Amino acid sequence: MKSNLKWIQLAIVFVLIIALPAFFPSGYYYRVGALIFVNALSVVGLVILIGYAGQISLGHAGFAGIGAYACALGPDYVGLHPAFSVILGAVVSAGMAALIGKPILRLKGYYLAVATLGFGILVSMVLTNERALTGGPDGTAVAKLGLRSWLKDAGIKLSSGEFWYLVCGAVLLIGVWIALNLFHSATGRAMRALHGSEVAARTVGIDVAQVKLQAFVISAVYASVAGSLLALQNKFITPDVAGFMHSIEMVTMAVLGGVNSVLGATLGAAILTLLPQVLTIFAEYEQLVMGLVMILVMIFLPKGLLPSIAARLRGRGE
Amino acid sequence: MDALMQFLLSGMTVGAVYALVALGFTIIYNASDVVNFAQGEFVMLGGMTTVFAHAAGLPLPLAAVIAIALTALVGVALNKLAIEPARGAPVVSLIIITIGASIFIRGAAQLVFDKQLHRFPSFSGDEPIRLLGAAILPQSLWVVGGAFAVFFGLWAFFTKTLTGKAVLATANNRLAAQLVGINTGWVMTLSFSLSAAIGALAGVLVTPITLVAYDVGVGLALKGFAAAMLGGMGNPKGALVGGILLGLLEAMTAGYLSSQYKDAVAFIVILAVLFAMPQGLFGAKHTERV
Image 1 (tube, rainbow over the protein chains, first blue to last red):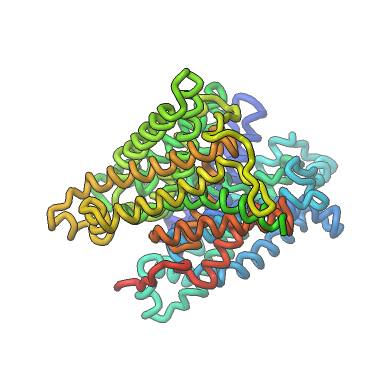
Image 2 (image 1 turned 60 degrees about the horizontal axis):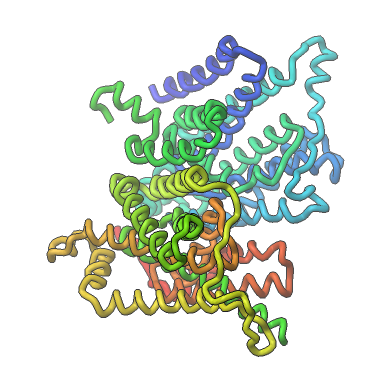
């Protein structure tokens, strides 16, 4: 039953990725779609951290920044192929998360929020200030992945938009699959147990510190890969990717859609990515609407959109 | 030596502003257990409203009073419309609500006012005062004096008046306070308006020095928060000391190390404090009850 649910959720994501382009009025929407998938990927990481393990982070954009700049700097400074730079970024992010996660994750609630926030802001400051290395606030160019021209030689012709739509969609699908598997694994159950009660989890023999650290490291890798994908498809990156507002955006997407649900978080990412696109006509009102949406959803749908809708559909269930 | 004195004075000025923001945080945190990420927006509203009221022809003191009163109203509205309806929600939700409120207020300010940098004249002229080989603006004395006045005012309010004690009682245990006849809803209104008014006062005092624009709030909120953390969340004495300490650290970093990384100090301080002594300088120890 449970594992049926996993395959249903995976199938929904898969079908959406494949079917959506049929409704795209223009090629531009492939870009928007790819952006949604990238955001959804980092948000799925946050579902593992916030939804499964119950730990908050307001600094995950820092890891996205590390992933993005690994792709920008890896080819130039280490001579790595961009594809391997993604892995380099993920490794650095994981190492960093493990390093700071140990002391930070002892903290709870607001204290944890602020500690992670501090970390994220420090990363973005380094990216902004080390001009010689990162190009400073103006950003820096990112090398081409080269996979598209390779595909072209093999006879598969894709526009840049279509290509990145498919790549990001595929990576998201893998991310969702891993997250759903984790949910039912021993580690995932341990995460959910400590979310319920740390003391109770410790009593039944769960190494609370270790499990929290695992959730933190895994979610950092998700954010890092998302950052890398963003850098590679835009071929350009600025320190904004690591900024405070990006961290907030990620958490809001997760909570908006439903932080306990991988599918909900993906929905949240889609909505908040689309909102600014829709609001371009009312550019001055964007912040106003964004703030209002955040407040209203938290008050009226505290569990997030998808779980609230699901609960309503099921009648008075849950 | 002169340079050191100069850094100390400018650090004190900036620190006093952080202290005022941190005091505002403290009041709301004590009353409702909410960390209000929109605290910096109160400072912005105080400064911006004064600028526009003054530009509309009102005398500066009147413009300042109107700004503080209006901001206090915004504080009350924040509590009634956004925080009270979400009572008992998890920390993540409350963080998103107050951040949402801060984005909303910023968006509204950008529409109602504009996106330019503004200032109004200093209260006592712009002639620097020489002090031990360094120069200090008269306005800086207003800022530092304001921070200490607010601190002592709050201290007297919380220890000497019945209303102040009612606020403390509510902070301690909402239900128990209700049982002894304290109108806790009113206490919340009072706390939010007080906190917003203090933020607005900070905005009024500091605008002649640092200028104000619709987006100055985020940075101030984070710094004020760092200050409150450094001193120990929920402790007014900690907020004051933490604010001034943070201001001094920033000024020293800018002066002797790197002005680029001046803003990093606050966050390094946060991390260091949280690693070494999670309760801050003056915070009480807590244990989780099972």
